[in-house]
Length: 429
Image (cartoon, rainbow, N blue to C red; front, top):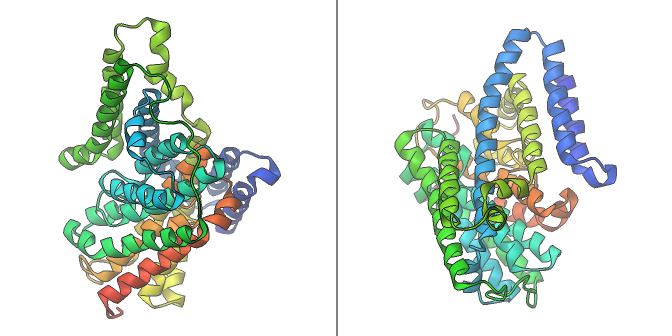
């Protein structure tokens, strides 16, 4: 049974990677892969139908929380974009120089991701990129940089990436410890690709739309600024909401979406229905990329099948037995997170190694947070940030593999080496 489920996952992964030659939408491949994995598990597994159904229901609760978070974040960003709210940020970016934009866009993504999360940051920044530059190749290159920067920025913050949050909640790392000892390696993970990108980029970008050239009235400009501020406050409020309520982040995102719904309705209360329509949440929901959400659903459900069947645990155990060195195991897990979701990998690691083996703030856990948080950048489908950028700009798998993956790998390995040099050697258990 495990062989069959593994084969289905591999074939599904290949179908996603070969989306354009096969002319089969990646969402369709992901959904079929997930359905076939779980069908094989329930028909040929030994757990019994009730146990499999219960496991699927439990996983769907976790998956739904991610999808609702994604839906809320994308809708808020679309609302801001409909009001030309990003015009404020765009107008402050005067330069067209490709090299200068690398540091501006990368820096904003890195630090914004640490406060929000890598997924929301990517959605916001890719939306800005679409407004900032006209050429599709430029858009995809800078979106790749955003994916690297957002994942690197989320890795050193306890609320910036779901795996770091898991380790924080599980007691493996402390907030101050993870920030103090992984911020420099995470910064290296961005700086190295940025330097490599600078080396091959020249000239200026062509702006998609000049700031202030769209004929907006002063009232519309003020409305755009107010919606931008409200939207960012709602996004910034998500980690605060989680901190004080201990509810999952998607509840804070949905609360923010509800507030934005009320606020935008109040802003346009004096307009007739036809003029008000394009500023509403209903219109924003029609604009978001629903197939990318379904693709994310399929990927997460398929990975959940691998976890439930014990395949991921077997992989983690095999790594421990064959490699032995925990540093190499963690770095390997980081690279695996570009193919397999980093959440079950970290969950497997938490199950394999107790706090009696590696106590809180041990370098093993800190390197784990860095590696699994940044390793997903090596493939476009390896992280939520990559999946979001892929859906928003229709980035092809092999284009990313050729143009962005080598940069991401160099940054990942450079940051890992930087952490090992700073942390020094630790004894093997």
